[in-house]
Length: 422
Image (tube, rainbow, N blue to C red; front, side, top):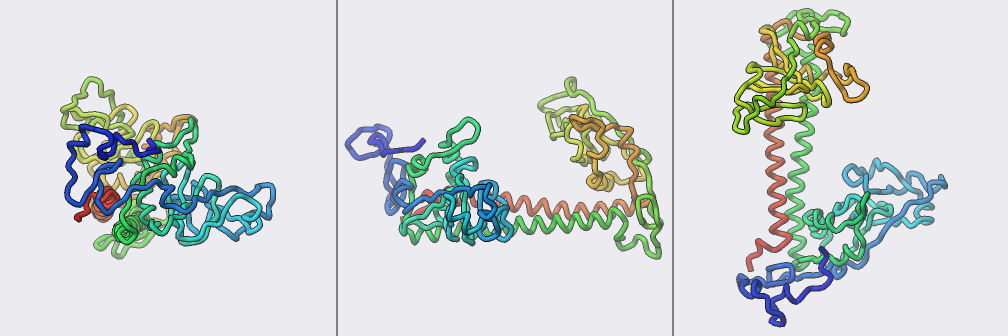
């Protein structure tokens, strides 16, 4: 809800008696405002009070080729999460800029969306042009741009709620300008923005490290699961041989999956479901319930029979699967975790036997040829290496989630003055 005017009933001014607010005792150094208790040296504004101007954009005519070129990056809502100023999705020419309602937005200016991705905001380090769904916000000297950027992050859900439209949501400039804004003096704003920028930098570094680890893991899997690279203790003195699946180590073999495992069907869970059960009931989308009866108790690789057929799952504890999810009985000469990693490199949709909803057939799966070490010990060694990657990535992902949660807590405190100690 936009507060167009500060209503007397929300203010402890003495002009209007509000029994609830009259009982509120502000801590020392704080004051009561229409948005609640804030530090005494902070102030409430509408957005319109703290910005000089809000500039819109536009789209040059698609019918005039010379309006489009490689001169000026042209930004739309779809670029918000993927925009690379060196590889923009589209560019417009200087002539296109001059002959359209688009505007050139200098680097360092906050750009937000007033249609579709409501509440999203970005600050680019290059000059860009924008289309009609975006607005560039130019703050007054009393407002730090980075502080405003984090305010948009914190209030994205509120801005989304202000949107209207049955198909595509949009927010009016008057509604955006009317939003209440709480802020300290600009020096403190800059300090707050710096603290949040620092934790953003940590989040970005963790995301990059996870991506790097995942890339290394994928490359390692490609090498180890095909035999192009051998682990110490395996393959010494061995050469490679040519096969129908390409060159493989001479002590490896090609087998149909049916010689390694048997594909089994899941069953209806209706008779075994128990909310207090100790075992998971699994479907293609994940766990859907609990049971005290296991359908299978040994290590197994699961794959969707219908629907999501390209997300294999490894289970090393008792479970139940429903009819849309196959499970496998792995023979004693093969390592289930190794087979799971092999499943991850199979193009399952190429084996789908339905034109509508993707579907797999057990007999079809068992006919798929795979290259693998003859030695189970080598299979285990390979799966251990890959598992170590998985565990490292999981730890980094946990750290990333915790850091993101810390950032949310920091925004809640720093952008509202909740941690101020006057």
